Image (tube, rainbow, N blue to C red; front, side, top):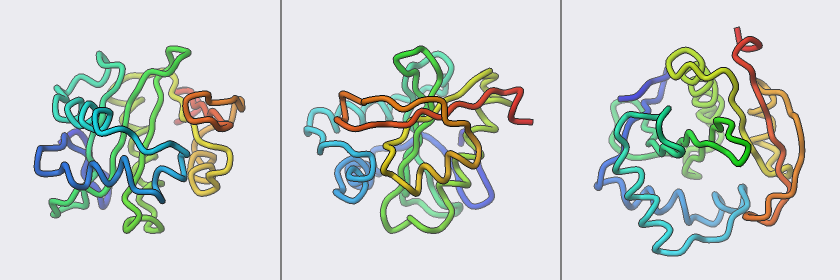
Length: 171
């Protein structure tokens, strides 16, 4: 286990989680909210292998993918990512399977990711990017972060909003 919240556990995924992992990367409702095109099978396999290879070193890796699980359950319900963006800032990301939307899990996990980033990983600043039209994720991020800019995301062909939070502003 990497960390936990009131209802959720974040830990490395295992091979048995591949079906749910693929769903998180390909389900139309999920990728439409980002928005992303459906990834290729090679891309999915590369990300799955990356997630499986997690060695516990979030600080030293430019991308760490971890699984989100309800306490006392084995099904993978979501993914979180700690990554380094194009400006060399540490960025947080999350997504959940559609069956788990509307339960407050994204807010709960975002808050815990922030606490973990500052208190354990010792980051001084974290960011999060979201498509401007993803109302639900914008509401969640606005609870904790400050919007700092909007920009065209060439990779996803959309306009994203970047949120930022400094450690000094968190406590």
